[in-house]
Amino acid sequence: MSADIRRVGAEAAPELYAVVRAAFAGRPPLDPPSDALAETPETLAAALGAHGGLIAVIEGEVVGGLVLDPVGSLLALRRFGVVPAARHHGVAHDLVRESLVVAGELGLDGLTVLAREELESNVGFWNNNLFTEVERRKPYVELVRPVPHTVEVTDAEAMRALGSSLAAVLRAGDVLVLSGELGAGKTTFTQGLGVGMQVRGDVTSPTFVIARVHPSLVGGPSLVHVDAYRLGGIDELDDLDLDTSLDQAVTVVEWGTGVAEALADDRLHVRIDRAVGGPGGALDSDGDAGADDDTRRVELVPVGARWLGVTLPGRAQ
Image 1 (cartoon, rainbow, N blue to C red):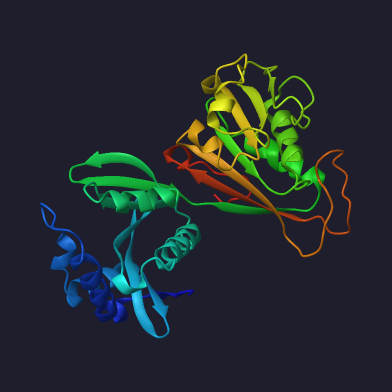
Image 2 (tube, rainbow, N blue to C red):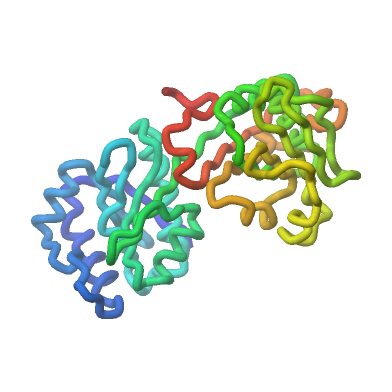
């Protein structure tokens, strides 16, 4: 059951007030108590009137909502709540997704939330939505999520150019997790990284050797190129016995979803999908386009405070 997420102002204060009462009153007793329960329709109207908010509607009923509050370069999510009857239906995830859209439109770096440290399930929800803890100030945990960015590339050369452009903002210790179907362009993208980082050796698919290390030719970090398709987990990745320390290299893991996340709390997910219907052509292997339209949609999804303030390729400054 999908929720209709709407941007609202002060006029939605009564509906949001009802959501806040239902969502926060059902939580376990906290010490000190949550100040959300001290909200009134009037205080929420003032907050919504300042910067707006979001509500989630299912079958005409308001079942979730939040107040948006720009703080510096981040968009704070206040009074985030979903009524008990609508939980576990993706409403909270929908609110997060729309909040990221708003932050991007405002030119902000990301989202920030405060969660009560006693409510481990709430902290877990934010972690599962790619928020990373940046600070603890009892009784709160502050978490942030940078704004993702999508770039469309039309052919293999454009994919390499995207990788080369990204190389300019990378530093030692960075981890990139690449995903996309066979032939999507993961290796082609990594070839561009190698060019931009000015590393030694041709970057090719590491399938048969699992991992290759490309040392820098200019005194920068090495490029560690890993294919995780045949790895059973993070322990096998640790057992590769690479001749360089990962904190002194940029590590790129193809097929890394579900395996490489444990390498670093701060990482960059690169998700490559075809932007049009039909079979399309392969942008990997020899790098030649194999169809009339090989446009790819590349989603750059940063995780962790490392990426706050970093201008990713194609994102307006």
